[in-house]
Image 1 (cartoon, rainbow, N blue to C red):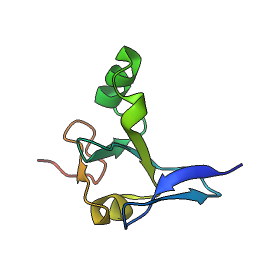
Image 2 (cartoon, rainbow, N blue to C red; image 1 turned 90 degrees about the vertical axis):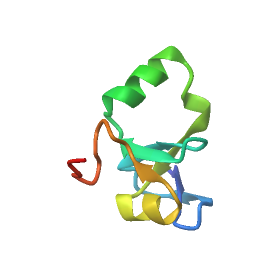
Image 3 (spheres, one colour; image 1 turned 60 degrees about the vertical axis):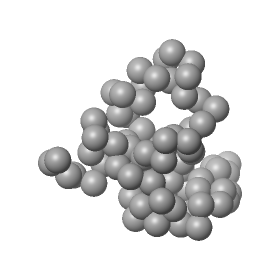
Image 4 (cartoon, helix red, strand yellow; image 1 turned 90 degrees about the horizontal axis):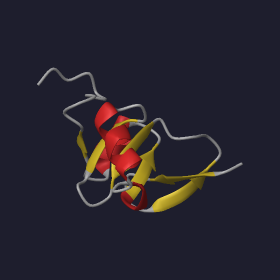
Length: 78
């Protein structure tokens, strides 16, 4: 099985391992796959078509995404 992830250059690529983080392409935000905020938006049907996936936080940041303030995937407190 292959997984579609976004690399540090912002381009999608196929990977053998699943993503550890998800993001929103238009808002340029990334967070944990179990983020309560993202799960609410997915349930409403407003989020899925803009969803992207990353291998790790460093890759998401290099691609120009910022961490979610709800789930704080980098362990940030503010």
